[in-house]
Length: 498
Ligand code: SAH
Image 1 (tube, helix red, strand yellow):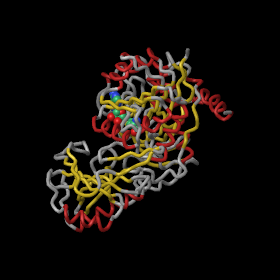
Image 2 (image 1 turned 180 degrees about the vertical axis):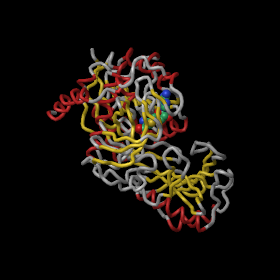
Image 3 (image 1 turned 45 degrees about the vertical axis):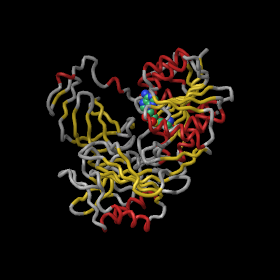
Image 4 (image 1 turned 90 degrees about the horizontal axis):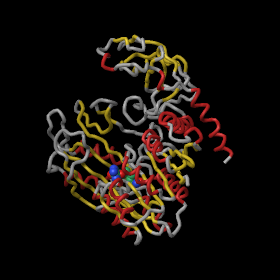
């Protein structure tokens, strides 16, 4: 408690000492006047692409990039840390900002560490791996502080921002690996794309992935190679295997394997399956997903089972969930449980409560909480996920929970209008946050217990501007769901003002 108070006190003054993003370009700035690569912007800062200059890093932005100021214009530089001095090279000049890359770090931060993943500065999803873990956690607390300062919901400077809950081991947490497969100079590569490009990097070791998924991917890579299975060639739009997806159950250790293919058929699959069965007994089911042609979507519509079981089983808060290849499950089992427990303690449910599980996915939150509540209703826009949620209710003998297909902004008001009044509400929206209509209905009906689980501090802060008309923010607890990345997750406890 005392600790939280202390943080609360320290935080607004810290915010004020940071340079405000709003002040670095003039009010009368006209983006239409900005042309070409070489330009003097109306704030008087002349700068060109390719130019080098030394830069002191003041802080990290919400995407984990370093922020400094070149003649009062904001500069974003990935891979640098607060208090570092770096020589940077301008890569882009925009009316509102300059983007640059590091040439040399002249003064290093004590928080700098060598990333375990050697490719961390090349591929996406490792934005903070050059930073000590405690500094990463502090950053994640600061992300929400920055967003609140920007949107300024009612009472924002007094919110109790709790220290981010981290992992004991901030590696090997990702239970699913979804890696493209290509032949590069005749070498079979399975890995990730370089940031902002279509260049695949072969990745034998990825420290944030569960070792089980990496073992399966690398073994399958070798088998594809040995058996000369047809691999997709993007330039020619020919060949078969495009992507391999391996997902491990944290509970059982079983691995589900899916080949996303360009072709309807799968030449060589019989020999491949036999070889996988022999080499990888942990694989309990093998699937083919058909996704033809050049597309930015990883998955196609059609999935068939080639061999084995239809699903892997995962236990969440004592409940069992059956996961087919497309069924959604959070990537970090350990921290997911922390998030759900935070939601549980913030909601403080009784057996009289009607609980709404909004943005339900396969119902993990509502079903985990069902035996603490009177009744649970949830909604979700993906019909297959709703089917899974209702099946999961059955498997766990939960008879007081029901899931429907539809949007939260339509179904929540509909249920209220029908007289099914929610006592408790948990929302877990995607990055876009809550729809205006839903916010309006929440403010109007004011469920007594309300928890907002957010994966985007920006849209959370925006939504709080509306929600704080009817609710107070008790606290914001950030949880590190994605160590080594800049991604943010938080649980907000809200209490009615009246
Ligand atoms: N609560 C789940 C899933 C959260 S992800 C869990 O913890 O696992 C957010 C979910 O919201 C996705 O499954 C997405 O399909 C769903 N969704 C997106 N927009 C929605 C909307 N407008 N109404 C209801 N659900 C929506």
